Amino acid sequence: MAQTRINVPALYAALDAARRSKNLSWRQLAGEVGCSPSTMTRLANGYRPDADAFMTLTQWLKMPAETFWISDTEDSQDEEPELLAEVGVLLRARKDLGEEEKQHLQNVLEAAMKLHATQRAARNR
Image 1 (spheres, helix red, strand yellow):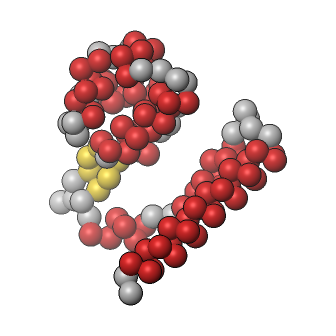
Image 2: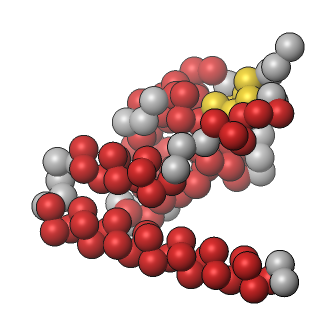
């Protein structure tokens, strides 16, 4: 039977991005979120949070918990949506960004992904 678990690196990266955008230290972030600083340290070291901390963190991020689930099934990689399409939907849903800002961010991401694909292809030759 396939097992589903928390993608700790993805959760930590989302928290780190939010922390940096708010210009907070990890200790300040823990206080704002309402969890202990040791929870943040455990995440940094790759340990899963307990269920209550996980729900608190995802609610603070305003992201569905499912965003941070991964499955052990072999075909889970095949089910990944196209990244630019997924990000485009997220950007368009943002109410705190103007249309020009949304388009700019999508263009930046698209350029970065093209550069990465080119570099990956060069390494694989």
